[in-house]
Structure formats: structure tokens, C-alpha cells
Length: 319
Image (cartoon, rainbow, N blue to C red; front, side, top):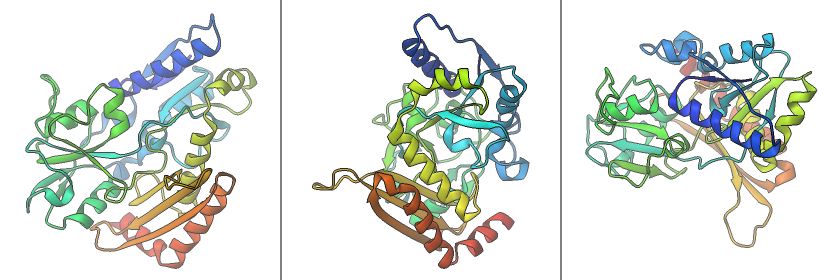
């Protein structure tokens, strides 16, 4: 039994996990437990005001802990760096593209191309801070909901995808859009390079969580794990944890293979901690071998803390 949220994106991700299980274990037919999380029900307040992104996973994890489900499928960026006691991330399938995508009905190539006073709808302090860093003239408004309703908020949704909020632009994860069959090449969509909008820890990855003592389920999930993805997201999450941050902090981090020629096996880790208004940005970067990713994350976090990251995060938490 796989537990999942009921949103269209969650269903697609969970069905992909089920398909991978069928391929790895012929004859296995996973069942599903679809649930509506607290995070799906409460849409009129920032996540930080109602318990953070853990609200998207706690009911699913509770189903796993109780034995109602063998495993839960999550968007990894929604998973707190501390799992519920007794749970473990048993598989992290191959990561999808990590970039953020700017959606604007009128079209815009990036944050700086939006006009003065344009409204940017988001519930992510990370996205808001990086947008304001690039374009202080923007006005950030709260926008929550599923992918369809957020696209509708900027005039790009399908008929029936209503949204109570209207805004000029919003930002969504490329992975989620593409998993739902939305082309990021379509009019009104602009892929943001990491230099402009560095992603959240674990963005683009899916986590399959089960009980630590459930050896049978862990064995079945093991073939789904992609070691390079698992190593990258573990380092990203370790940095967030070392900073004392969480899923709704203005923290961005990405560990990815080095693209430079002549650097086989080398990885690049980039991290940022921002003030909520984007005016202050602390950055750290490390290049290392794959086996040193965790050490690089710890070292980068120490650099950020030494530069004053704790104070920025405390300000953000009290904002």
C-alpha cells in the first residue's frame, strides 16, 4: 500500500513509483491510499503559520507508522530534514530537472523583466527573496494551491482550474510542470537558471518513506533508488539541517555534477541564505568529488553561519 496526497501531481508521482515497483518485481501490484493533507486543506495562510511544509507529509507518514500503508511517496522538498521517529527514506528515484519556472500571462524572461509593481504570487520565502533580490520593484502576494490553480492565477490554467487569487506572475518547479505534461517552452513560461533562482533542497526529487524496521518493504524499494540523486539530496538536506533552517526558510541549495569540461566525477554545491526582502544574500560554493559531498555541505554551512546566516534566519522566522 502506497500512501499519497490526492493532488494531480502527487498522483502522477505515486503512480510512477508503482510502475517502477511493477518493473522491479513482476507480479507485484501496489495498492494506493489517497489522503488529503492539512497542507492541502488550509490554503489561506502561509505554511509557516500553520506548521510548515511538514503539513504535506505528516498524515501520510502517520499512515506508514500505523501500518495502514507500507510506504509514502513525497515530493522531497516538502519533507522535513528530521523524519518522524522510526521512518527512513528508503528510495530516492532519479531526480527530474531542478529549475524553477517563472509563469506570467503577459510573458517575462525573468524576474527583472517584470514591470514595477507587478504582483508575484508565491508562498515560498526562498522564491520571494530571490525574486526581490533580482527585482525589488515587485510586490509579493500569498499564493498557494496545486499546480493547476496557481497557473490559473496568472491566466495560464485550464478551464475549471479556478483560483481565488489573481496575480501577474508566479514560480513553479519545472519538475512538477513536466510531470503533469506542461511544456516549459509554452508561451508564458520561462525557465530560471540557478543563478537567478537557486532551488530548494531536494527540488525535483521524490522520496519514498517507509518504516526503518520494515525489511521487506525496504528490500522492495531498494531497486528504485538512484545513488547519485540520493547523495546529492542528502548533502542538500544536511546543509539545511546544519543551518537550523527548514522547508519554509529563505535557503536555497543545489548539489549537481560539475558541467565544466575536464572535471569528470566532480560535483558543485551552491547555497544561499537570504533576507526575506532579498536585500541581503549570503552565498557559499564548494567543488568536490562525489564522496565528499556531505563534507562539502557541512563546510559550506559553517561558512554561511560564520557570515551571519543564523541572524538572517532568525529575522525571517520572526517576520
